Length: 328
Ligand code: TRP
Image (cartoon, rainbow, N blue to C red; front, side, top):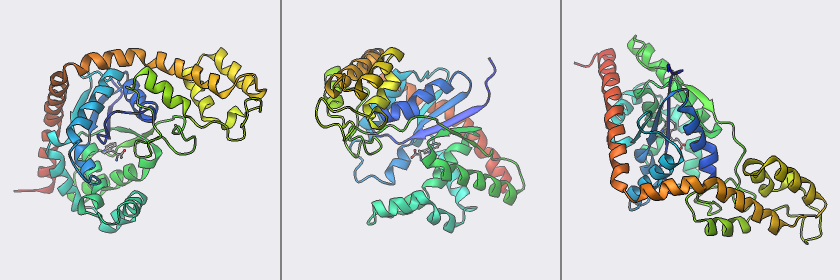
């Protein structure tokens, strides 16, 4: 079947993925495969811009790859690979840097945020982060890039760089990608206040055991106004209810919605029901993951095969780039 275009997305190797990653990115990656030619990249070079140590890089890479594969990324149809295995991306990054005004990079909100976060490590790579991301996308002539809204400035930047490059060298070589905003509910951490994230340790790993999952769910912060069991609660401000809406049946959602408001169900039982449904949803994923984890070499082979296929696209683009620039 003819596909509607090429999708490219990347994620830093953060190790075992959590529910926020799953609902915000991975599920969408899986679905896009039905309609698009998809390329999914583990961006290890990008990760270096913020890393203090590379000790866990390999392990984090394979853990994330296992999660992607077990969740349904189909490596025969799609391309899944590690960024550093296609070194052409660094070459394109350098070429793009010649048409990138420095002020644009230092003005980006994402850059300013990193400067606040790591004032003692404002390295050159960090400034060039969006240039490398633009190179990722344009090396593969991607039409669409599924990302969260926080990445919008980077996609806009990529489009500008494509135009500058094509204009400067007088050839339409680079493709301006379109952003595909992933519409997902904001997944809060177990603190019920901040976005779920590994660094905040408020996350639930999708590959956790059912017992660990239940334990984490029981720690979730609910409606803060509901203190005693007999206080009525407000599901509209409760993160557990948000998750019920994703993982529970329509009847259960309705039951929780009514019974919470009149204190018919307590937070403990409400969480137990959510944990049960979440575990049931993740059961097949965990079974596939456990099986694949027994053969890690197969996963490295999949990533190597992906890199080979990605590289042949990349090398063709680089030939056109060299030609457009007029390199001798
Ligand atoms: N910057 C992205 C993030 O932090 C990761 C990324 C790198 C990416 N290269 C990309 C996303 C190319 C989409 C396309 O989430």
